[in-house]
Amino acid sequence: MGEDGPAAVRVWPSILAADLADLAGAARAVEEAADGLHVDMMDGRFVPNLTVGPPVLAHLRRHTRLALEAHLMVEEPEALLEPLQRAGAQRVVVHAEACRHLQRVLSRVRALGMQAGVALNPATPVEWLTWVADDLDAVLVMTVNPGFGGQRPIPAAFDKVARVRAWARAAGRSDLAVAVDGGIDGEWAVRAVRAGATDLVAGTAVFGEPSPAQAVARLREAAGKADRPVPGRA
Ligand code: DX5
Ligand code: ZN
Image (cartoon, rainbow, N blue to C red; front, top):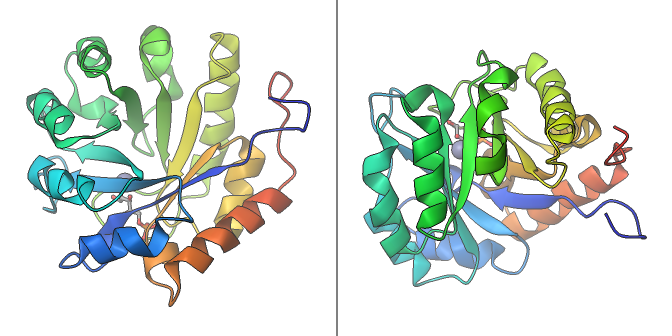
């Protein structure tokens, strides 16, 4: 945190809500407004849906300068790590529930030069992070059960954001990015930021709007109005 107060929240539009036949256009629409793009990868096993994989991210890489984050809603995500590095991903987020050897997966992501994130389903306890505190760059708190865009958030997930922040501080990791994902609009963004979120993932609230860039700006504005917890004390 600088002298000017807490850093601004980061906004990651989720391309799941964009026109999947025009991802270059989706990237262009938020190129100047967003902090990065969130790419939801689903395997039809971990979640009952199928989306895209590393080859699509590789193509997207050629059309945008934005950071690309792969959210892997897949079983055995380790098989995708090298393909994602070759494709140009900056951050890989794996589900704790999908990894038999979570620490190994996270350290592999970092060894490949990417940032490592862990996503927690709504029913997964924060304690699952305890023994990987030093292997992470980001925690993604799922505010819906993963698999589909456009769902309504589960209120308890926002209490969990506060728990993740408290846990990170106690673990000496106040620097961790804490993201929320699922049903985030302006109102839920305020709740998330009040609870300690530093990053917002939003699909429908961005690409479901006539101007995705303005929608990102509105999310930032809403987040800016939240009374944010002060790192170190929150
Ligand atoms: C849900 C995905 C989310 C989702 C977000 O399984 O992980 O990233 O696409 O989209 P909205 O904001 O529409 O819930
Ligand atoms: Zn996601």
